[in-house]
Image (cartoon, rainbow, N blue to C red; front, side, top):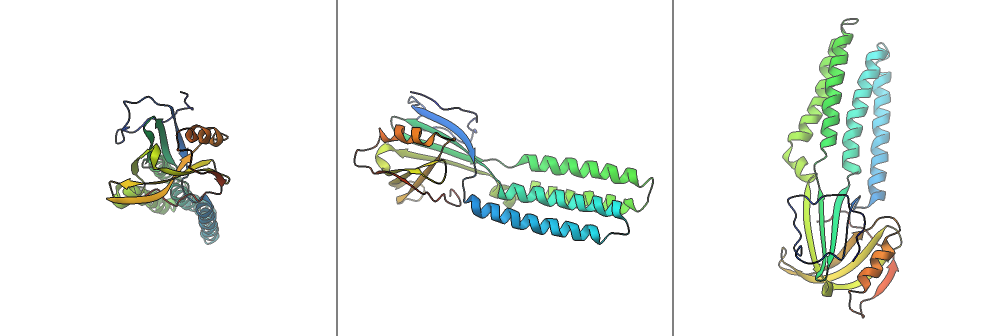
Length: 249
């Protein structure tokens, strides 16, 4: 019927179940699909701790302000990147509406950009410190400590199986139109909320929960009106504050 802007390609781990049916509506979006207030509060608290720690490190090395400043910069940069990769993760969503119902593919790839940043930072700082030893041999200690610390951070992120699993997710959600029991337009986020009751094959039982459909700015009313035509006339249609879950598991 019509399509909203598409930008993301579906990963090979996920496939549409109703791909043989015509797509009535579909789009992809990147979004922070959790309680952003809590995540932002945690970020600013940790950022303040990192900043204060960096200042204390720098002040403790007044006898060598250049070395102290560089070491502080290395500490601040590496820890801040790790913090941002944790508190500001974005999940990728792909929605597809067909005559049979709604499909939602959601996935989160491992943040390779953080590893690339740390790798280049370690390399550049190592070269800089080695170069500075020509003028001051004390920089040799910095060449050993600074890049080595960044390298250890890089290795812990790149080769930790538990960390990689935490940062990587693939989910495929499938619902028929008859499953939905309430349609709501969120007043606090760009979300259309659909309550549903259906048999979950993974859990082996009937579950009742909500599907948050994340929309682009000023599109939720349009999406809600579209969905409403495919629901039973007795399904309530409301506007309310929606509590976005802390995770999608």
